[in-house]
Amino acid sequence: MHALARLRMQGGDSSGSECLPLLRRTGNGTRKSRGCIIENRTLARWHDLARRRDGAGLVDLLADEVVFHSPVVHTPKHGKRITQQVLAAAFQVLSNPSFRYVREVVGEHDAVLEFMVEIDGITVNGVDMLKWNDEGRIVEFKVMLRPLKAVNIIHQKMAEMLAQRQ
Image (cartoon, rainbow, N blue to C red):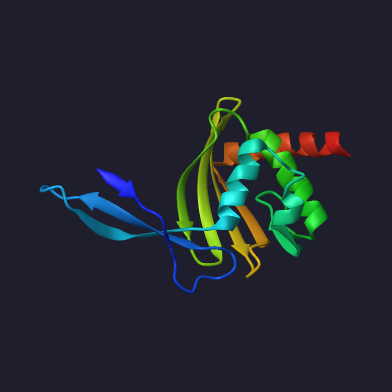
């Protein structure tokens, strides 16, 4: 059985990184450390905004110079406004009861978040790759999707959503 305990990192940065020691129980009931999971205020804010589908709240999380890399558009999008619009649309397209993050790999200033969601009977497997600055604001956001059917359905749904917002 695993248990998580929160322990603030010594000398952590202003983004508020925390170490969550992963503990396991041994046969005699004692706990041994099995490593450390990094938790971060930036990620906590991202998860909260995504859960609530709060596109307006992204203004405080995105850096002015943020760069967004789309899985369907070759040229990266630069700036807070366009990134906020795309991510707010994605909140609407991807947010249904089947959406869940299934894996997170977290560093001091970046994270890779794997997700699964079903849309129109198609299972979408995706990855959000985030990078943030010392202030905890996201400076780069990259999305990757698979399989090809998933890329096509997300492209269609995102185009519809963005057209409605203009």
